Amino acid sequence: MIIRTISTALVMILMVNMASCQSSNNSKSTDATVQTVSVSDFAAKLKASTGAQLVDVRTPQEFAEGHLKNALNVNYNADDFAEQIAKLDKTKAVYVYCRSGGRSGSAVRQMQEMGFTEIYNMDGGILSWKGEVVK
Image 1 (cartoon, helix red, strand yellow):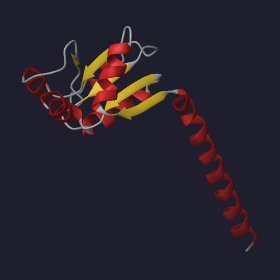
Image 2 (cartoon, one colour; image 1 turned 60 degrees about the vertical axis):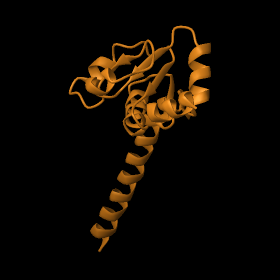
Image 3 (cartoon, rainbow, N blue to C red; image 1 turned 90 degrees about the vertical axis):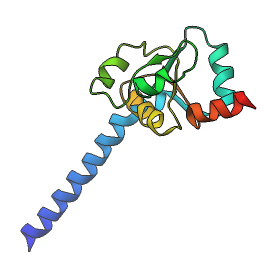
């Protein structure tokens, strides 16, 4: 009975300790500016930014069908995605988009974990951009 109580207490202490380690590991990412913004805010922030890095995370085929001016194509589905993203300057703003927002949202989370400090994700992706620009 005493051994069982001690074992339970040790397991509880271990769980609390692990939880506190996880929250301290994530603390670096709270220093970053990460926002999903509307097409108009994305365009305005991009235009006002000097040295911004514009990243299209769609496939090369999608990119070839049309992309934003000066965008760099880094395929989120490619095996070397993290390696390619790591070549960007983590201290400069990064503007990310995809087709509709799913891949770019995942890319943004990964970039945040990699230590990027300012990331803007275009809400609705290039489909929303085309819908706004065409109107």
